[in-house]
Image 1 (cartoon, helix red, strand yellow):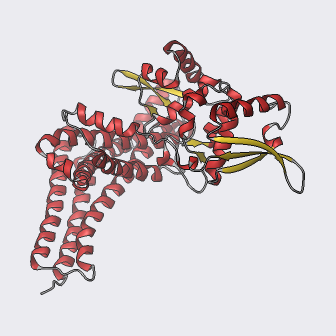
Image 2: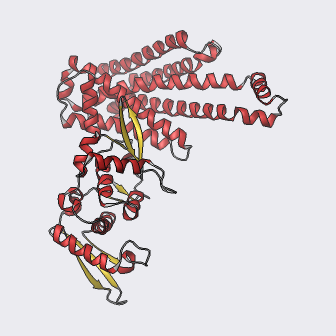
Length: 462
């Protein structure tokens, strides 16, 4: 999507080739906004040389006064890629109540559009943006919206030239005509797009390419068909969206950390999924089973990360409680006695780190609980569904399924407890170090006991 921020930037701050570079970036960015294309492919897609593209990238990655950097370098393995930094990273962060956007219409990527002057591109983008917002293939602008004053990039002549160029190159897509309002007699521009253009847009498949590449690099060399990819992506989107919802109205640092964490859990789980595929090829014939398999891997990864952040927050908390230690450091640095206010300033960065770790622990804990409850709830809900006959075998299968989830979860918690015992911070007291895990296990034991009782009392059909 071309969001409002990107739209405004394209109308005022770019050359013709820079305009095409931004459109290319939007079509080839993953959910984090990282452009998943090497330089030579990007140059070919934009329709320029690698040398000139490097100059554009240099401009986009450099500070531009009060404007944001358009590209931000991102290191992925040995490669340096670029994150497109204007607007939300993807439609995962889209708010339908507040965000206005333009779809990536097919004509934006045609040779005819690329050949237009910058004024032609800007004018056509204005029409397309309004078409997308209003969901109408006929839209109009008051003349003063396009040529408001002498500071506008458009003059009367530039506007006329742009209209003529658009008609010559893309007249089969849109016609632009001058008219006047019936009552005010004010001049308006009417854009009339060909019927069907509103739904002729390109879909960003970069995340799917990344998914297939991740699984391929994990050792599975076979093809993953689109139906399986869609189901796996659905699971990935769930954790991204869950974390994004939690990131509302919190610090930018925590938002970035949650987004990085969602990517890590999803990518690491895909690698494990790919490693398991050779022995589970039947999953490629059953997309829903494939997504359930990946979802279970992601749950285990999220649970492990929750334990890590819980341990990290407890470790930082134990450090914060060492007042004498902090006072000594502060006094050695300043070579004098310090008061409580100065002490608070000294530990402020550590306190922020603690709040970040503790907040993320809560997010991960809530996500894991929601995941587990939803899996168990499907079992009892199935028995409560009216009109479906249930047998003793159905009840036995349901009980075995619930027991399998319970035992898998306990096994994972026990494994993590052993890791804490071996590698945990020994400066933290053992009962404090193990408390998050032991408390969670106690809570889950109570939960599974209640769910088993509920299943036991549910009636079956004779």
